[in-house]
Image 1 (cartoon, rainbow, N blue to C red):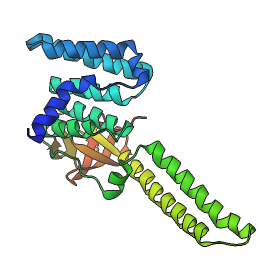
Image 2 (image 1 turned 90 degrees about the vertical axis):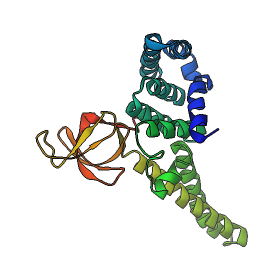
Image 3 (image 1 turned 120 degrees about the vertical axis):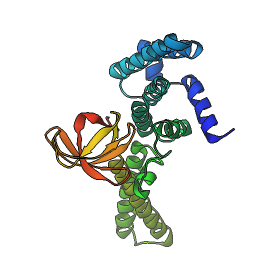
Image 4 (image 1 turned 45 degrees about the horizontal axis):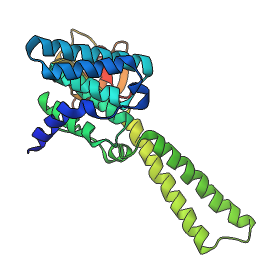
Length: 257
């Protein structure tokens, strides 16, 4: 099987991934799963209606029980089936932000981006890539443990006879952990700056005005990084390194927690 075939197969079966406990008790989430399974067995307009019903229920589940990996991931699957590739990319990105350790998210995200006419992966710097190796809370805990551990091993031995090899080694280890974890937190900060274009052929303009010249049009699913804002406009850098103004409603923030 090719990677694309495996990814599409993953999208078909992803509804059966065990959901988070909070969502498994949500009636809307359950209805979304039922509608998705029924749509997968149907054809034509019945399938389209089923996937729309599933998407509506997943959105309701998020509104009722809050963000969860399962709800955003399954919503991305339903939107992909409907051909809303830009919105599917957004939901997979949100699922990845909640739990970056699930490989099926990256797999489906790559397929959705390719379906939207984009490269399989949005460009990321090494700090952002490092950050997404672990959930944000894990990096925060590591920062706290490394920082306090470093201070404790640095100060306490001075009160009890000075440093020894074991305390020096521990101090260096805690310092390294704190530094690495701080970079991980910074990676999440960089990740939070990204938005996803959800409007097909959204214009990147030379000025924050609808009458300003269009520098280029962007495909739905394109990632843009916000640099600054002005009224209802955002000055952004696209994943292709172009810069310009985009109407804020055309790009939705990934990190919405």
